[in-house]
Image (tube, rainbow, N blue to C red; front, side):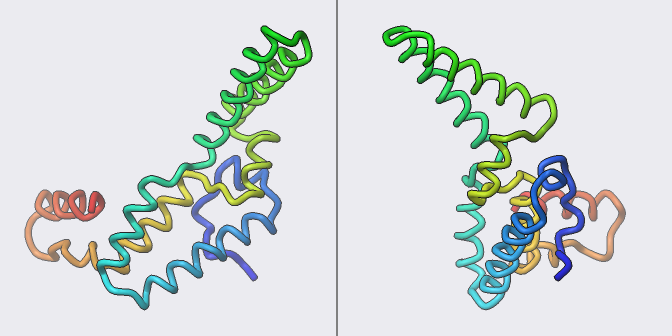
Length: 155
């Protein structure tokens, strides 16, 4: 089955196995189909939850930083092995920051973490379902239409 999510190409998706990308896309598709049967208020509530969902970069950053701090604190008491762990975690975080992917990203990706772009794609689909973009007037000048579009994109 070909994915509907062709617009969300980035370094993380490119370096993630197709099966993992497909599983994440299927979860989003299932959710959007479920929300299509719900009231507008339920869609709004779920959109609030999505606003607080951590993206892959945040998960990788927090996890690697926590392991680095843990290794430094434990290394101060128990020796070199813990400091090596800190160095490895910091190196993996550096790799992720430079290349946009790496072993940590692969790990949290397999666990279901999504990129910010993937989360935003789901939010956009749900906002369209909710009817946010029907408020954009067809009449009026370009400025009025642009302002209405910006307001709709924020809601």
